[in-house]
Length: 324
Image (cartoon, rainbow, N blue to C red):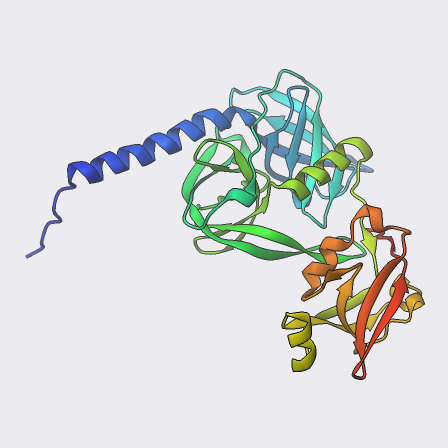
């Protein structure tokens, strides 16, 4: 005999209603700000379909953000369809494959911009709502929680690769075509741009934070985001115990490869060097180096402290601009 579950208590019913009200409020607020993208690519025979995805409206006058992998090459054009049936042509203003972000400009104005939040304030277990507009089917809404923070996601351009830092992991289901859509908090503020499905029940989003805002601003004004470049490949390695105690940290970055003719090669860095400090900042993993390679470092002398054969050395390095 099947045992029936006990009916929900008034407290449980009220909690469910509160959850539903929160998701509904976020959906109603953001659906007008999320567009469906039909991506076209120019060929000798004309324009051909090249993919689909979603995008989030940033400004009244037509700027939208999406994933770089959704739009592909920088000469891409297409059509953006909104929840009210409105359709506008768009072109790619700029793209940054190494953050998987791209900025679009639609021809029409009078759009409804989303409010941006700050992913740095998120906590594991917090309610999030994923909103996309896959294939122009009137919007797709799923809800869940922040499963984990601080994840990394590999990204590549034609000439370079790096890790996207502080990626948000959520169990809110991401449907096909949701890439480039919004991940929002319980107040309807966009705190991430949905970018990948990592497995069953696992979605990843590029965080909206100070670094993201800087990238979007650069794409809006310059059409690209500039980064400094060292020319090394490496990985985290434990420090010798004595050095670890003195520095107060456990690891540095071992140089595995030095690109010929790169700033690192010209500075005298060698394979098996252990980088422990860059421009006065501690280095424990590759992400620490990536975070320091900002545009202000291009062409500026940067001291790098390494451990080589048991001896500490300080080398002078001048980063170049990364040609992505």
